[in-house]
Length: 120
Image (cartoon, rainbow, N blue to C red; front, top):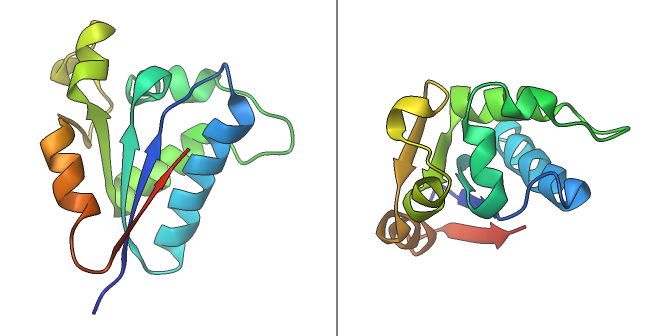
């Protein structure tokens, strides 16, 4: 059985340590060979837009843009549909490789056999 990790990040620059932890865990799990799905919800939805992850700063932490790029390259990154809509973000606005999807997709991924879901 293959293990998968679904990570939901619910915060942005207003809670930088928690935000960066979610991205770090997702990228680390991917590097360890897990199937990874990273969900950007709430204020984290902004990191699906080009330039936003690059502007994020947290001393002594891996750059958010690098972590995001790693997960886009090897896993799945999703911006929550409702969160995107509330912020005026469309599917045309997100980083290439990032999708916009809703709660039904999140629940499907989180309830898959062998899946572990974490929320930051």
